[in-house]
Amino acid sequence: MRLSSYFMPTLKENPSEAQIVSHRLMLRAGMVRQASAGIYSWLPMGFRVLKRIEQIVREEQNASGAQEVLMPTIQSADLWRESGRYDDYGKEMLRIVDRHDREMLYGPTNEELITDIFKGAAKSWRDVPRNLYHIQWKFRDEVRPRFGVMRGREFLMKDAYSFDLSKEAARHSYNKMFVAYLRTFARLGLKAIPMRADTGPIGGDLSHEFIILAETGESQVYCHRDVLELDVLGADIDFDDQATVQGVVDRWTAIYAATDEKHDEAAYGAIPEERRVSARGIEVGHIFYFGSKYSKPLGAMIARPDGETVPVEMGSYGIGVSRLVGAIIEASHDERGIIWPESVAPFRVGLINLRVGDAACSAAATGIYDTLRKAGVEVLYDDRDESPGAKFASMDLIGLPWQLVVGPRGLAQGVVELKERRTGEKQELPIDAALARFT
Ligand SMILES: Nc1ncnc2c1ncn2[C@@H]1O[C@H](COS(=O)(=O)NC(=O)[C@@H](N)CS)[C@@H](O)[C@H]1O
Image (cartoon, rainbow, N blue to C red; front, top):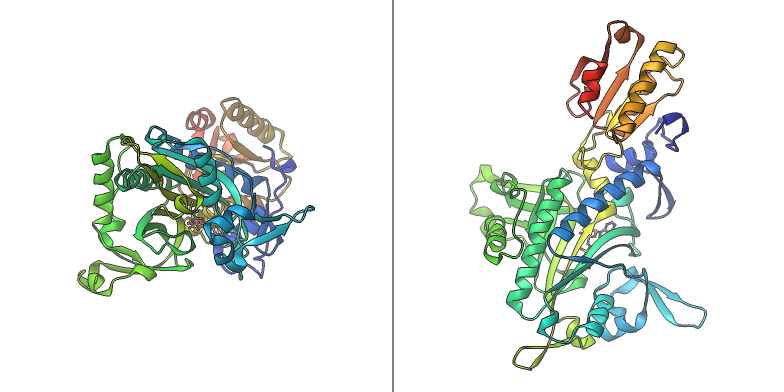
């Protein structure tokens, strides 16, 4: 993509309404624009990151055996009346009346709808275990949306729902999601710690929040430092091997880590002082086991092999896909701007032509641009007629992992400059050697 034709309305100044760094940088880098309170338009740069995150979430859900569906954003109030949550949900629920005066709502979550879909299709133990997920926009009329996309009113969530015959089987489904979440956040370049958590409006009695430590986080969390030093498991795990999956969960949950609501001062106090961590954190995922909380009132029953019918055992598992765009910036930035992990970067290489008017420079830069694109490398080519300083500043702001700088002086010596955004490390390389790094 040539920057001279790219829709990327960057801002020079920090917008006054932005209180945290990710909100500031997303506005300044031209990634989003607020449409109304807590509701954002995703511009090309932000949308590319959102889709990269979404795709990694999708791959890890699929790897764990979950199956992707797509449920609507608008739901009938009927199912929510059956589950008893229509009134309980309170003011966060956006209630809508259609032209036939039917009571509808913009879904804040989908337990009722997915249970109704499963109920219509499943009849016996042969139909479980199943895990169905979708990646869909939600609406929660937050009383104080803030921090940009971190606490929005309309936001993108991956929400998965598991169906099992027994509590033991449901626990394995829960454990598989626990492991899938560890892998997902590791691929996003994040250290997300699973912490015992409250279940809130979703319900149930077993729940973990996946938290990344960040000063601007809304959650207060406590943990043993050991849990921050655990490595996420290797590349592959056999999700059908219950003992292996349980082993990973046990290893992580054996170490103290809890959100404020579930904090146990005594257990925390037993940790040696220098190994205690008390910090703010950002909740990027939240998983729940809640048994028959929805299947009983909605009548989602399945027959056991002995013929007796029981309400299907369920859990639900959410990841804040749009929140993650902000959370990754909170975890990965410096004073000059964003530092994207390669796995989610909107482009892999930022190509800078230092002197657009210079024929040799432009020929070399355009040649590199064409070669990289032909090799399938995502490259953003700054071909604007701007000063070198302005180009360096905007490339550092938008945070692409690599910068390739073409200038007359370097060319005279047959080299271009390669800079790694994360470390700031620069090296001069012949053009072919520089290209070889990416092709
Ligand atoms: N207002 C919000 N703005 C952005 N992301 C949010 C917001 N509320 C929740 N999230 C994200 O969505 C994730 C799941 O939300 S949740 O309420 O915890 N869980 C559920 O809704 C369950 N139905 C999981 S399927 C959270 O961990 C958080 O990362």
